Length: 187
Image 1 (cartoon, rainbow, N blue to C red):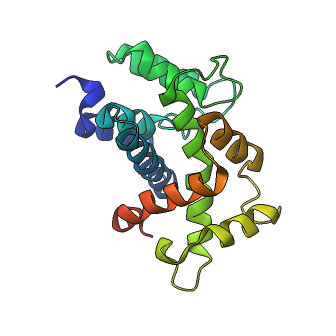
Image 2: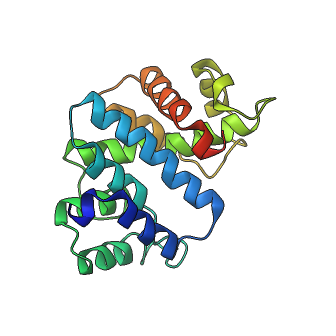
Image 3: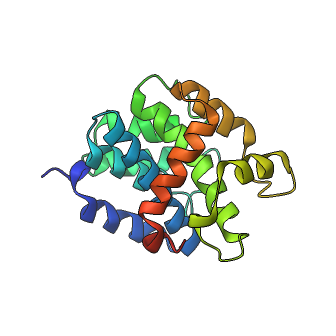
């Protein structure tokens, strides 16, 4: 099995560069959503999942727009990851210089911000679980600019549009994906 399909090897890379529990949980949340879409679209779940798992692995060490995700892509290329893999990662940044054209690139972008937002919504629920999160409450929180203010609402909306999925459907799809991994995510 090559490194791009080997989750255990990708986890080693993730854990080598990422120590923050919240950033690790974000990686797992994005992975859950992207893998669910890979299943829906009959794509390579392990490849797509590992792209999602590693999309921000360099962020803790290289947090600036000049470095992230470019340093990560360089590191991964040096380890034998393909351009398809690294281009998808670079494309998730609006400033990455790679136009999102492939289904994988569009899916990663669409799942990145929404997974973080859904996690934030779950944390403010009475039992702090994704099981209580509904599309209606997510839409209400999206309108509240003070809530999870670092999350780009524009990226959430345009991500769903570029993926060709209605926003409520995308939100529900990602809620369902996170519910499948709620123990691993602490949700």
